[in-house]
Image 1 (cartoon, each protein chain N blue to C red):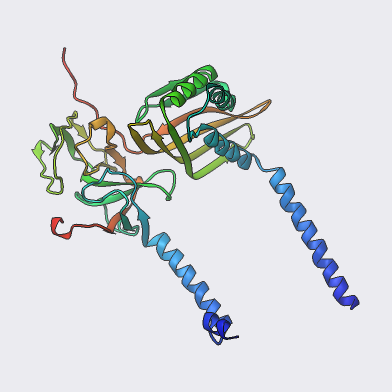
Image 2 (cartoon, one colour):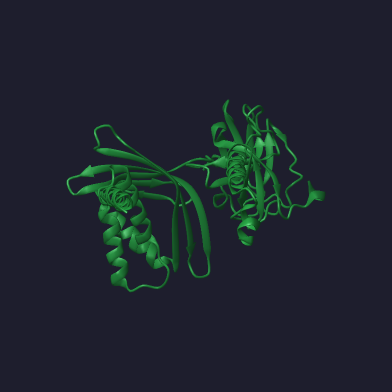
Length: 177
Length: 171
């Protein structure tokens, strides 16, 4: 009976310690895990499932913009031509996009994050899939996304982002005027 | 005890070992030889339809290079989501589209798998030593709406082997 009691006590202590380690790991994640969670949160904020009041759209646009640095650079050529160089432009672009679409779904696959040795920056690569329903038109795209995060005094922020040209489009013919 | 015998057999340990071995083998085959996937999108229609299920032969290019006409799998950031495109030209060739027709090294290259050619027109480009020209079979969409162009060899990770809804008489 004593032996059983002590066995149970050992198991209970091991469970408590194990739970404590897991909880500590979850509450205090590594930089890369923290950054990955930020990106997932960004995707959730970007999604739109139904019509929304202007104030909700504005709040989401603000939260998305605040996840970027003040001088953020966002660039892509295809399929969506984007050239953004400030948080304010991010806010405007998000508001305009949300006004144009009825539904927007974003998902992330194959996410890889590498924090620099000095822990002041991190590079991230992933496949981003976007499905858009504009009410009368719809589009779905998958692209490779490259992000650079920067550690700011108030946390990690996206400094640059661009879509990788996995398939480089052929140039159009030269036109002589 | 009857249902346990039915599920695990007379020797549960051996059954579990066999199940584990089968799981490992399936994982290895799926990772290194043949990988199932589902097609999303109309880029390869009518050859491969949206929603079709397929098997990709990921060991196809371990010992040989992609050839013209083959439908290949193109990796993005990882293996979960890939592009499915047809190889139209190989390294060293000069390629262009003229009103929907593919021209390679100054000669028209027939594309018997196309139902309609479309009207794409591009400037000529010489492919580098590790570059391939790829495009989907759905050419009736406008050029800017179809992802087609030059891809580096390192991105091509396999070949389409089998798929549902395949019209064997058209191959």
